[in-house]
Image (spheres, rainbow, N blue to C red):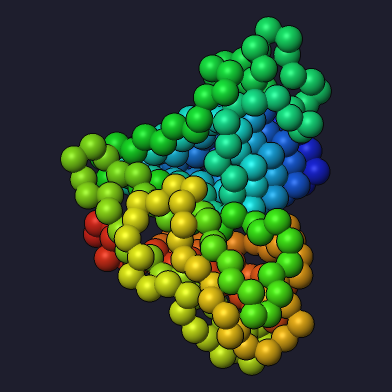
Length: 249
């Protein structure tokens, strides 16, 4: 079921339920995909929800969105993907609708501690993956160097291995020519340096013209995320599949 341009208090997908949410605000209560075969896709939205929960074999994919302090939980064989999304704190902000409660002590969601960071917890064979690049403050001219800050990490059940490797690559959007900014980078990394763009990029007016218009897409099968940027380049962070345990499907 598609949902767009809305303000939602709560969203739950039960057996076989599927929701696609775009350009919306989700707040106060829970975002939950409880399976089996349930899925929730959220794109270009603001999330002030108390918690984001996936269970059974459900998949929740949040892309190009701002998340403010939500607790993320995954169990059983569920997967939560956080791509090109800001993993923020529970703070008052303009899209805390209809207003920031006076009794929330400076937070948006009064069910969460004011200023609380997002928490991520996985159990059983569940998996939470984050892959993202922070938007540059402005255009990156050809010949300039730029340090890409972002996320490349996975959360698994206690006792399981959460270390991973990632690559940071560029690809020309029109010619398909490609190259590497960083390879075999070691994670997990959260809000840290992923790689540095050096001098001598391919010809073009700028590497990046409109960073806020960029978005990332992530496929569960390959555990990878690609960030299409404005012409002429695309930059992507790819997490190696070997970082994740076999899941039997």
